Length: 363
Image 1 (cartoon, helix red, strand yellow):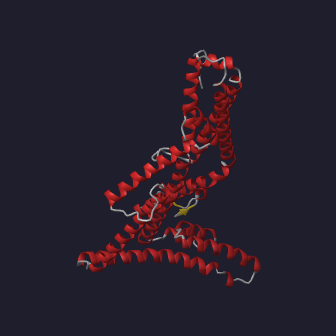
Image 2 (cartoon, rainbow, N blue to C red; image 1 turned 90 degrees about the vertical axis):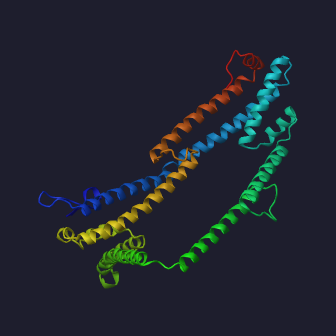
Image 3 (cartoon, helix red, strand yellow; image 1 turned 135 degrees about the horizontal axis):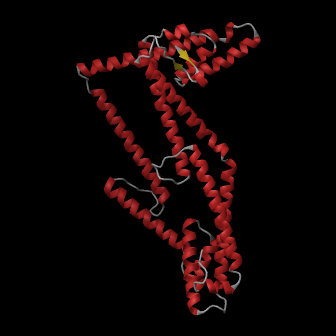
């Protein structure tokens, strides 16, 4: 018989009537669906839960970048201080050039590009254009000679244009392959065994769909608002019928069964007498529902995995995302304080000299 502990639909066993295999599987599938739903709710709520934290993170990242740029500008000015020895000036020059180059690779900045031009004679924008053109040429050669792609009319030094052209040609190739496969399947005549298997699959699919339709029709018959004269009851049934339609459209058998229990359309005796054949159809519907929920959960997890720049196979949960953000905010705050402290200390050329001679640890 069915029970609903903590809102979960389950078949309960008794000493006189232990659960059969299909009933046990039904319970297992229901529990898995509830776990997946809880996980998806956690991912859905994460965006709003972390809204303030994400804003704080973005602000700290930007503040740290600006503070780092100001520190590089200060060290660049200190390069011209007469108190520095030639050895100290050479060491500071390498630090300024290397740090500027590294920061420019993360994000372009006109002020940093000007420092690199002044101190190292390097035109950063030109270097970037040349590097992109070289990368685009290598990409073009690889796709032309190894995969037979054609890029007539596509910019030779634009990676974005090449990527768009590659995506279009790959899609065209996939479409052509799909059409060819479809044509081959249409020409191929299945043998007697294959034809019989296809018929069995189609018949089973029809039975499974009918099991879902039966539950839906029972609910629709009981809840159709046009059959209700009382306006309050009509409004209640209208709202319930909307839930029924949404659940049926999504093939959400669990929600439909739950609605049947809520409106007392079925009782313990009725549910206790479900035949194994009907449970088998229900189990197949629940299994399909699990596959869809697993895909949704995977997409939600991958979304945050990419945002946090984690390893593709790293385990991740909403709680882990919250902890990762908390640790990042704390570390960014510390890093920002260190950069600002260094800026204040390096205003004094004597501190710069001590730092360069190894008396203070560089940060």
